[in-house]
Image (cartoon, rainbow, N blue to C red; front, side):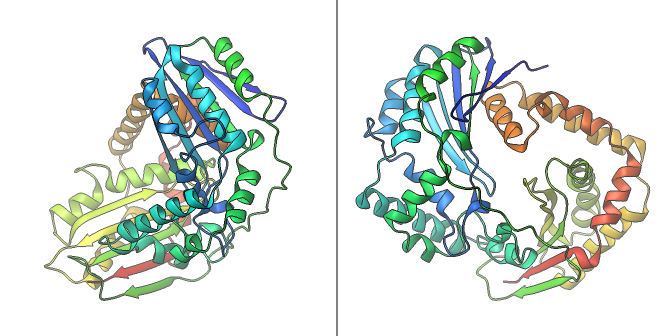
Length: 411
């Protein structure tokens, strides 16, 4: 059982504190409830751009990284389609340095055309390297708009096009910042070697007087039910082998459907004893790689199959073999031993994630963002109460041809 305290300050900031005496460090994890899903279709990539801009200095701190390093700490950040997460790990006696750094950039991030131009070039270069020039890098630039037609999940966190970042003005980024980077749109989680009441006292000291945002919360359009299968063939890619992607719409992260889908993905592809590995790689060698996994998005997301095709087979035969495996899963029995093994692996994974104070800080903030912070203690039980019948019913529900989008990615 992980003990924590949860407090909401007068300015709307949610503060979560957890004491862990097994480390001499603390982690200050700041989650902002803004990701690619909050962007406009004509201004995408802004959430990810801010992941870079937030390290560019603030009113009283011209060099963020230097202050962190001088205090013996480390910092980083990441952006998802749903949220942006920043974290600083630092020796416990220096926690106020971390809180000073985070509060100052929340209150008064520096904006200059010079800094914006530098970070725009960094992001555009990242876009080119990771998404346009890397093998299979642009898969999600093609697959997301195939699967989504209305919801902003139809673009990745990097954005639809580098042109959106190129055209971003100083006023654009200031407006984005003042709308989303505010205490009433943030969660600060402290985990580490500090008493919970002391941590809360320090957060109040550094964040308590930051004013909340008054921007209205935009309404995010929900994706309608997919009623027909979709296919796209993308040829002449500079890749070593053909690849196959199939995605099926599933429910949101907080739903029971998610836990069933997560178990299904593990039954199909977790480890060398899994069905897809045994039947499609080891026995028939039709795939050199094959995976099944879930996205786990805040809004209804995707169940994903991705595979690299072996040289000795065609993509048509490989797709047929994968569909046979999916059909087989719908009709073949799941043994108690097979099911229990996956539940044991899941329980071990969750337990390992609770050992590290940094993971606990991130998990507590994430579950609070989802709307059920007590999942930090109850998620094992949610998996354990899932049974084979529910898993089978969920598979029947999602693995329907009209619910599937397929991308054939050919060399």
